Length: 579
Image (cartoon, rainbow, N blue to C red; front, side):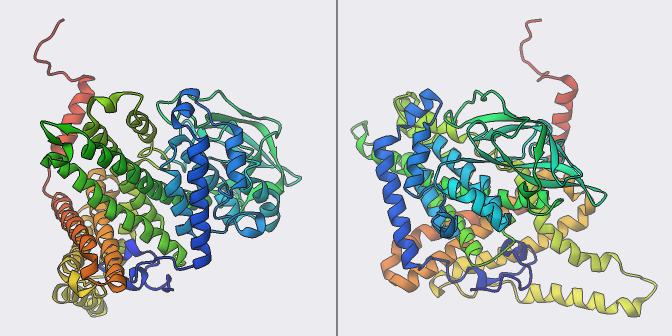
């Protein structure tokens, strides 16, 4: 196991410093626990068997409901507490094992996936991570068995992506209890969840902080509102929640008072990772549906599969999915290896996964043709279900800013050595200049290298290493140009985070294929090599383009055109006017 505390304790952040901590990603983190492998296979087999007999995705969509019996049955199959320790009735799976079962779940039904994701990925995750022994004993057995459902109550009418600025407030009482008032919005399992981890502002040590509470169904003053009427995920029980002088006993405080925001963010990191691997599962289902159709459907005297524009779409689906799968499971592997700071990696997997599967679903429907537009086919429901994916668990645009600002922070701390130089003391500052100059020289003469990739992958590894060095240089250029105003440069955040995602994905693919070569031999892995070369070449081109457009772009024009539109309040340039 790699020491996750060396250098920067996050792999993606180290890339922006121009460093590749190869010990963290080589060899590719493939789980070798035979006992866990057996459990995963059994759980997936039971899930597929149960779904084939009892889960009708169209019926769930039409009824806008999942029967309570489904959750009870899944609990009996061991699917409601996948990562919960066995002592509390769970399966005790690793992060990778959990993701593999959720990948299978992602192929069954969107509403069910989200309901179980809310329950496990974020709902009771906080209790597992931060709960006391008493809280775990009290809540986890019923949650793992499916006798109760969990929820996660963070979002508010005025605090969506800006989760820090909550208005819900909890006031500590003389007896140690808390009185909670506020409103939450768009809460999954909101009407049927029995245990909801809820966040509110509170005064702690004279400061305004966040505190996490375990709210239980039945507490006086706690109410669920009417279900939201949603575009997709119709079976998801999504509701507002209202807290009116709800008394929270001191034993229902999760973690320490004042630590709520940190707890919420760590829980969300886990949820984003699950969205990334869940997207892998759905992408595989879409690909299977598409291949079946284009190979069986004939037009103009030959199969659709033979047309080059069809092959272009299928080739894109396969190659990108290979890269996404590699990145998603490298991320779960980092968590299993003990890396504690994986916020950036989980955000990258969430953004890449949810946006890929959205584009893929559109292309799959396009290849199905007019039939794909019919409600008798699964495509339109899939499109409705997944449209929310780039929005919840952190909107993707916000996550791009989060990623960029997070990875620039360590570099900014390094560069502060140069901004605080006292030019009146040239001798005293000479060492600072010398260290910085030597570092720049070292990076120029000895470019960042990927040394542990298989020799047959050396051209791909060389380009990836060069792009890591370029990430560092472009990041430094951004900080020097914009300083603290970099926080408002959203268009640059998008390009930089997308470039970082593609560099991260290339390294994940190089590690994965290196392991494949070492296990099966190069000649026996020709297909994986071919796909890896295709993905990495395309990803590298996207990186070059994104980084080049950090500085050579028409952003100023876009800002100006948008502001003109705001002033007009409409398009304002119609060719024909009726009035």
